[in-house]
Length: 217
Image 1 (cartoon, helix red, strand yellow):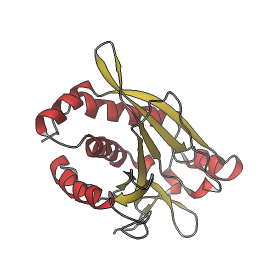
Image 2 (cartoon, rainbow, N blue to C red; image 1 turned 120 degrees about the vertical axis):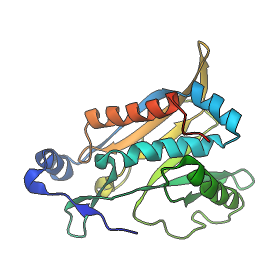
Image 3 (cartoon, rainbow, N blue to C red; image 1 turned 135 degrees about the vertical axis):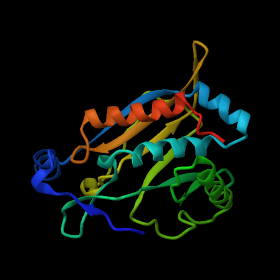
């Protein structure tokens, strides 16, 4: 695991914004959007790949393409960015009516990521603890899924979460509308790390990956 890289505060355009939302008005915000996954669903059926892992990979690819969503703090509280972030994701266990959380190393090749993550997904289905792989490493971000319901709004209230600068994603049940398949996606963001502009751009990256799923193999 590599260490986060400190940000050069002397040349960082968002220094004042970061300090304001980190110290004076610490806050997070949430946005819920619909992602058109019609083409992605078709490609996954053709390739026989797991939908959940494709969703996670697309989100992780977008996150790793934008430094503001890989932000962390050094031990002395200074802003830094991870070179690479890996997704941690929940796995529901029907018999116990609870879930486990595992993580899988991010790989820019979807096939390589899918095969490794699928093994961890299968193993976690019968796990008896919340974290079967042990404590999560610091260079992961969270993805969860609510496949039982669609939603138009979703937010988390994180007690004492002002040090948690990484985004949190929640995926909802697909909806069909006018012949298209739509995926609800909620994104929880710390305002010190990213503004609405940055989050809108991240959502656009995910939309592009879903609209042009030539990465599915």
